[in-house]
Length: 73
Image (cartoon, rainbow, N blue to C red; front, side, top):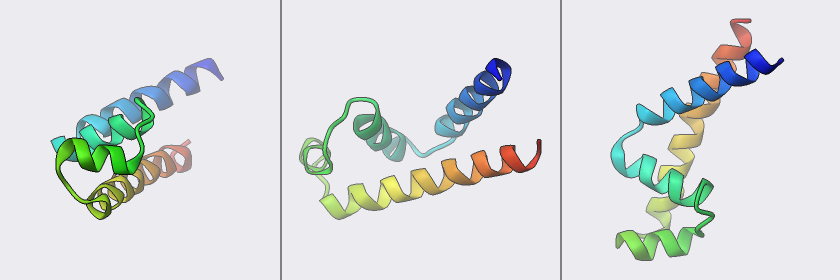
């Protein structure tokens, strides 16, 4: 179980590194720094809709990679 967890963590980190720079930055600000979409939009001088779209794309990629990992077991 510990090995599976570590493999999944590595998969997530690897997947995140493949994201475009802005998408990764938005993802980290929201998920790791607990910033709200409005706060991120203000800090990056972009619209809240753009933040929402980038988060949706990041999560879609992550979900697909995790699903592939789980199916491949």
